[in-house]
View 1 (cartoon, one colour):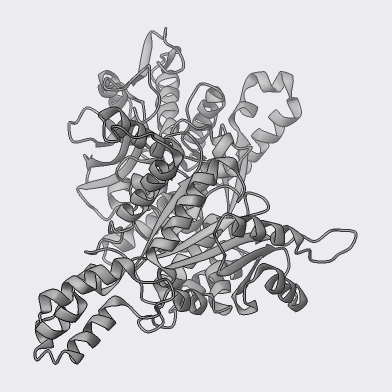
View 2 (tube, rainbow, N blue to C red):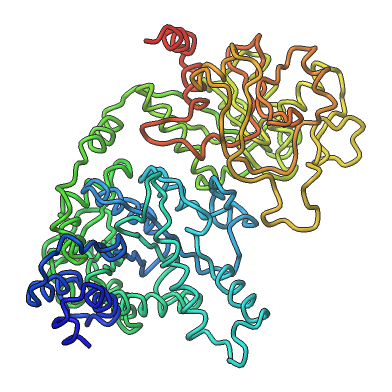
Length: 622
């Protein structure tokens, strides 16, 4: 067939050859199929090559960078994967990301923040792992819920196919059915544009959650092994993140844990091309040599990600160690990539390091024992503070410590919580569920309102501020949310009619929704640039009761943002207060390092007494 294709000078036959060769290309073949096809055309004396136009998928195959972890969890695989994406993007490549979570949950929506950190919400309503938040912030992309793969999703899709009869007559097994489903999912999601441009990305960075050797990740390891074989060595690069501990007594950097981790990975059929070694201090040369010798990785491909002042230095660490060259070389992309342009990133990292002034922010919440529970809120505060040339100084206050019962049970914690609250320049109450700590949040909102302290309430933070206003200003002593008190005679916050009381997962009002600005001259409208509407992400089951809006507004609490039906309250302001704002949505999810959330920026400006000047300057077009 190949001989006939050459002799007939048929471009259609050449196209067929290219299609076949792309699928059967040996792993050690160092040139792409299109190069061979053009060579064959020349040898066949094809007179018009101008009519040969390969499709986009033929021009460039998807390249995959897999990031795995070893020794222990929590090494920073997510930050490493995000940073690799930043460096590759800085080289002029388009990058997308996939996070694999081996747990059986369908998504992160029903997980406790203490268990797994915050639940990050995407535009399409996906409740996903917090690492996808890192990807969006680092790469400035908009991901979909399918960019987060879980064992639960894979098993569910395979079982649904089995029930429909798609595997009729077959015994459904982990191999090949589960592994094929994983590969198909990765290959289909990797071509979805996430950067607002047409066509697929050049590189897909995949992070495999957990630690190599975990039982639950075995099907994914096998699927990724098969994927690496099927796409070819020029399209697959494996970066293994591992720990290099230092024993206190000896003081020596120990490589044995990483050696065992790599050995486990190789036993499963995957060999790392690069090692990303986490350590407190920079790696010594003899440590690198030992790792190279025993892990079968070139010394130049052993990267050291040591502790840095802030995570924005990690892409710079990778760049400085020429990680991009090693990855691009492995993926055969050196010819089309540019030197990494990270000037803005460098300036951002160094600017933060050089900041000296700070602002004290009281964070009153339920899950303050684990800061990852509010990771996006912390990042949004960071973005806003840097825009104001400040460092955020966050004082974590457990809401329950502010309650009167705490004064009797734990008087020291109670006194410390109130002292911290009163010394803060501003007060933020982030989202949450359940009634634990609600009374403390209400007291914090009341203190902010009565003492003209800038206040930002997000989701439940908005609802408790409405409850406090109803109790203190309207005189409704038993005003409450039906979430906290089903028997309350004055439910100012109610359950959404379309919600489910029996199923918890994916039954809330989720994803990006439009909020129409009702009052053009309100603070929120000005902060958002005098727009008529804003689109922010939601995650809630309860909302302000529309039946009490009129009486609340009569007493001064203005609802300046509503949904498109006009029945759902999205934003309130207290005009007599310098900054007392509550929002039903979560503005933190769309905050970016160079584009801070408008509300968080206004919050920090109000805390430093600069909000009025900022609004005037922007009104005058400065």
